[in-house]
Structures are given as C-alpha cells and as structure tokens.
Length: 279
Length: 160
Image (cartoon, rainbow over all chains, first blue to last red):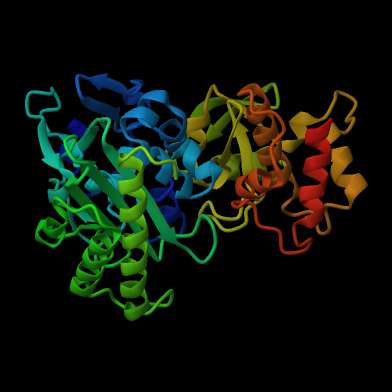
C-alpha cells in the first residue's frame, strides 16, 4: 500500500496477471512499478453469517470448485466456466477481474446481479480506512473503476443465495473461451406465499462501456408475476433501452437482439430454478 | 534493470539463476535454460504453447514472471519422461495416433491433457468424456491436425 501510494498513479497492481501481463507483453501498459500482491493474502472463501466473503485473490478455479461458492453463489460458480481457459482460471482472480473492469466480464456481470460489494483498502493500509463499495458503483467506463489510484480491492462480499433464489447465466461467443459478445446474469427471488416474483436483477456484459445492471424500473413490472410472457416482455424492455456499440465482433443491433433473447432465456431458467423445477 | 538471484525448481532439478524482475517464466525456461519444449506463441495466454505445470497446475509461462515461480515446482513436458528419456504413456498415445504434425502445440496439449485426466480421476469423476477433453483444450490451439487425432490420443491415454 505504501509503494502504491508513493507511485502516484504510475504503478500497477499484479494479481493473477491474466489481463495485465498480456498488456505488458503487448506494450499496451508500461507502468514504472509493478506490485505483486500474490504473497500478501492466503485466505480462503468463508461465510460470515449470510455473506459469502471472497478474498480478492480467490482464483477462478476456486470459484468453480469451492463448496461454499457453489452453495453461496451458484451463479458465479456456473459463469466461471465461461471465463478464459484452464490456465486463465488457475491464475486469474476475482478481485483482479473486477479491478480490470472489462465491459465483457462474466465475473463483473455476476457480481452486479448478485448485489455484491467490494472492500477497498486505502493508502493507510491498516484496515482502518477500509470502505465497502457496491459493485453497482464500481465501474466507471472501459477498464476504469471509481476506486482511487491508491486503493486496492481486498475482498468481495456477496449476499449468500437462499432457498427460493434462482439464477442463470447465458452468453454468446464465437468460440468457447473468447470474450463475450453479450453475456447475461440473472437472479430471481420468489415469494414463499404464492411463488410469484418478489425480486429480479438482470446484469449484462458486452452492451456498453461497462457491465450494466438493468434499471430496476424495467424489472419492476415482474413483481407478482407468474407468467413466462411477462419475463419475455421485461427482456424486450431491457434490450430496447440499450445502445450497444458496433465493433469488429458484432453490430450494435445484433448485440441488442442477443440481449433480448439471452435475457428472456435467463429469466425463464432463473425462475424455474427458484421454483425448484430442475433445468 | 537490477537482476536478482532465484532458485527455480524445473523438472525436479534446482537451478540458481540471475533474472531480471521483468523476465517471464517463459523467457527464463526457453532462453535461459534452453528448454525448447516451452514455446513463445501469442504472448497473451491464448494459444497454450508456453504451458507449464506450476505446482502441478497448467499456467501460461508467458503470463507469469520468473520471480513469481521461485521455489515452486515447475514441470515441462520433458519432466514427464523417465530418467533414460523413456516416453511418457501419453506421448506413446500421441505417437500411435499420429496426434502431432508440426509439433509446436504438442507439449502444451499433453500437459493440459495430463492435468485434466489426473484431476478428473482424483476427484472421483473417472475418465473425462470427449466433450470434457474438448472443453479443457480450448486454450491450446493446433493449426495442423484438426484436433481429432489429439482427442483420440487423449481418450486412449485416459482409458489406460
């Protein structure tokens, strides 16, 4: 933390290195100082009451396999299958992925849909200055976060899934392991009383300069709903509101269409899972 | 840049080396130690030709610094061979099935496949399916074979 504060923005923090190292190899980044934080933390995922606590250096492979993650955030455990290749998953970390803030990030997408927060540690480095930042306030644009240059992410906190929570992750890629053209992560909670939707969160990647959470007002119409047609209508409303850019991988219009189709599939699957129907 | 001395444990042998903090593990293994079975392909972790096992897990040698691997077990394909350079059973399968053409991707393919089979067996899931093998190998590109014979070879090895 002392080195980072002293470098005045000319340092990069090296976590798993699966995005930063390619940037260094390709000379896209040339920091004065590289700070390797890998030896700094050996903690494992843990459950604090109803909160799943993932240390920032938790590797993707651990997210995929760890029992607490599979039970506490099955959405994340499933989505990590789509991240990179086996070597990326062996080294890449959840904190590094969120700090890198890629607009096509599967992990960022799941963090948003799960209502995750990050713990950011400031220059004092003693834990006294720690603050929590909802992931919905973390991303600031292409590969940019709202964290100060002297802050690092130490933990990711996720409200643990409860019975009655459904989840789903869908993405479209040209080839397995590529960056997502569009990815969608959904969580749905059903009311115990009548099985109608009590809460729904939809997060999308690949549709803007950052991963985005659909406006709650667009999912508000789902409250109390029990019909699949309502889910499809909500997906259409969410997609209409997006203005994805065109690039070499896909046109903006195609991305918007994917957003609608994948969101509808994800909502249906999440609701079915929340209701205990096997999918 | 100031060099520093590290101990790299490669294929069960200790090497005392002077490295720059910016040297990747790939730089040191290929250029420093002359291990031709670890190769520079893309430099961004996509192609898999620099795959090595770090404490038994596949990683990209181009995306980890040599200083980060100090004191840890690094295994290259060569490390799978016996003391008299006897072929590993997986290498025998690759030969028998004609799973290598130019051979550039082959070491990375084999190390990734070996990790998959070991992990699948040790976690009680038994022999990986052809689809699971395909999924594990998405990060190892081959421009010659079309993959079919590579999958055949790995299935034959997994059956043993």
